[in-house]
Length: 113
Image 1 (tube, rainbow, N blue to C red):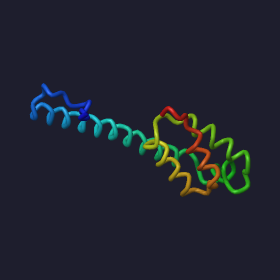
Image 2: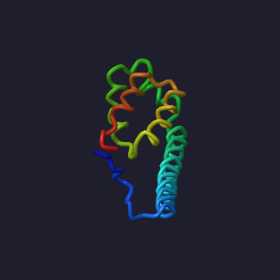
Image 3: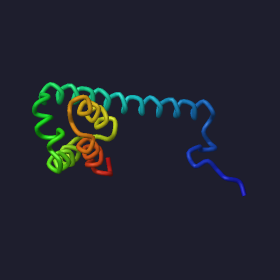
């Protein structure tokens, strides 16, 4: 019993198959490029709006459970997937946020995104 490739139609020519693959690879690149531009823009805005003192107060070393809860809520509010949330988490890591608050931001995302 031979296995058929489900995504390849035997009626398509090799040229058409190559054009389809090229089109889909460009569409994926464009999709990722839009997300990356959005992610870096949001990261820059967050770093400008949130000063070092605010981050220390709310999610710094003395925040304990409050920092984790704020991280969970903040992580759930961000749209997009890992391309958006990882630059934001890196920005928080550069400030004085605790690792627990950053993990809460990363895990607070809805799983469907």
